[in-house]
Amino acid sequence: MKKISIRKPDDWHLHLREGIVLKNIIRFSSEYFGRAVIMPNTKDPITSIDKAISYRNSIFEFLPSNTKFNPLMTIYLTDNISKDEIKKGFIDNVFFAAKLYPANSTTNSNHGVKDIKNLYKVFELMENIGMPLLIHGEVNDPNVDIFDREEVFIDKELFPIIKNFPKLKIVLEHITTSHAVKFVEENNIGATITPHHLHINRNAMFFGGLNSDYYCLPVAKREINRVALIKAATSGRDCFFLGTDSAPHLREWKAFCGCAGIFNAPVALESYLKVFEEENALDKFEKFASLNGSNFHNLPPNEEYITFVQEPNKVAEFVEIYDAKKMIGKIKPFHSGQTLNWKVYN
Ligand code: NCD
Ligand code: ZN
Image 1 (cartoon, rainbow, N blue to C red):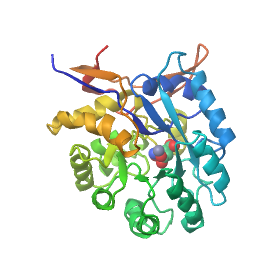
Image 2 (tube, protein in one colour; image 1 turned 180 degrees about the vertical axis):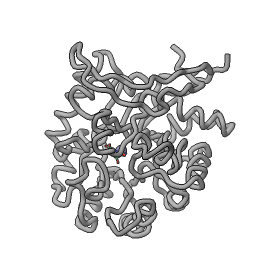
Image 3 (spheres, rainbow, N blue to C red; image 1 turned 45 degrees about the vertical axis):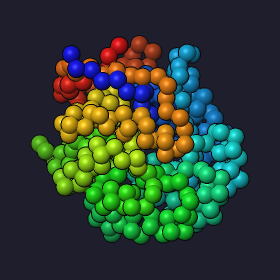
Image 4 (cartoon, rainbow, N blue to C red; image 1 turned 90 degrees about the horizontal axis):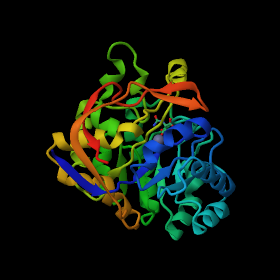
């Protein structure tokens, strides 16, 4: 039986949602990851210390009392966010990082930033106090083709940020293009890569009819980009690390609006492992999943280990969401109904 053991991974980009959905899905992350960076795009976004504390408390409410899982909270940047709030929240260890969503670029980002220049004073503060900036790197200009929005963001917005704030710790999140791979490698920033962008290209959304199960933002691109992402993730290079961008949407909402987001938490590690195995790069998996991210953020790696065994692993069609004993909805996980070939070994 083939097995591999690695330090427990961290998820550097995770959507946990709230309420009943949070309660039902948190275990998929908390059992297998040491830490996770929790995205602040809740319905009422996390824009203050009080909101972050109350969100963190609600997460702990649904975790077993002996959990070691550490949710790292983020503040959602807006055009008029208070610098004092950011500074105090970071110094008091409430905020791990700040998240930049260009307004209307993705799910629950309508309060996001309309003009990034408005934040330059905030970036200056963050650079001084060593607070990481996590970026959803897509322009929100409707005149820019949706498949080009990451590339245009990098050239028009990210490049000037880096030039103006060379010491600011930046993570370009869920990268989807070879352009991003090259830019990250050349500019001393970090990047997360999702499981789904390693498995699908843009054809997936149009196979067998319009299929929103594979619609996420940034949208998957051409195959040539997927290949570049696989090379980057499996290269072992320090700047690339795991961030699932697991983003659950109830079935009814996917059906109703085709909203963006792929729920991969139930299979994320097995999904990455499939790619690393196919690339003959299992020896690089620990770097990507468990070492590069913490190293980038100057944190120690997790002390615990996790073992995976090579065994058929049938993925459920749906994850059912229960309120008390009543099922109130379903969420389709990534790889729904497929059989993967790695399992967590207990
Ligand atoms: C995310 C969500 O649903 O919150 N959706 C997505 O497609 N990735 C938001 C985001 O990270 O863009
Ligand atoms: Zn996300």
